[in-house]
Image (tube, rainbow, N blue to C red):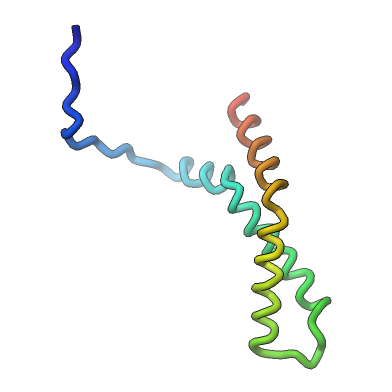
Length: 91
């Protein structure tokens, strides 16, 4: 019979290297949602913005498009990260 471990003993922290953080960002659905939202905003803001609009109006429209792009891409981002996870698990 093995002795039970004391749960109050402090745990050693595992060192996480760059691979861990890269995999975390690549496999996170929020990363893809933010990326697609930002790309959509960069492309669509000049098309939707009247020429005479400057300053704060540009920034507000840009942020609005980023948020809409982020909200719309929830399902595709989950699908993409699921595929990436299965790809990395199989290799």
